[in-house]
Image 1 (cartoon, rainbow, N blue to C red):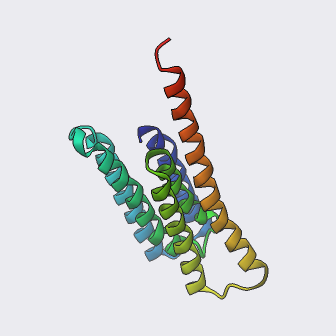
Image 2: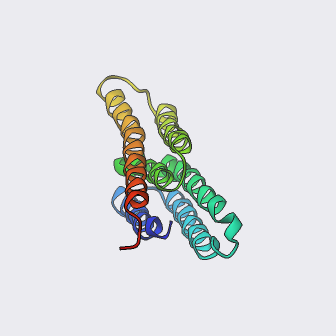
Length: 168
């Protein structure tokens, strides 16, 4: 999970900061988004620092972190999507983390939850029709397919590790 935090957290930070800077949302929206971002980073840091303190709970901490990241993505997307189109990429991060750390079923559930939340928020904000509907659906399908692809890669790596062993 530390590897995920090393790459995904900076990506999310950059994505959100670019949305705030170039999207120029209203002042209150910016403050709320930065507050959510701060809470997200602080929570991820705490979980990363403490997940192995209680070894029996390490797996649960990873699951909690995955789902919390999806939960944090929902209000951030709701607030910033009207100002910055690439915000949908936030919904790729949690399912990808799930793909690397959880079961196939949980990966699918996380990916469908993220894709569904994205579609629901966009549908709430504006009508889905014509080419825009196609774009939104292609984003949703990408979230699910990419997560399943990463899960398959991770499972293949585990099978190879088990087949050849970690010792030389």
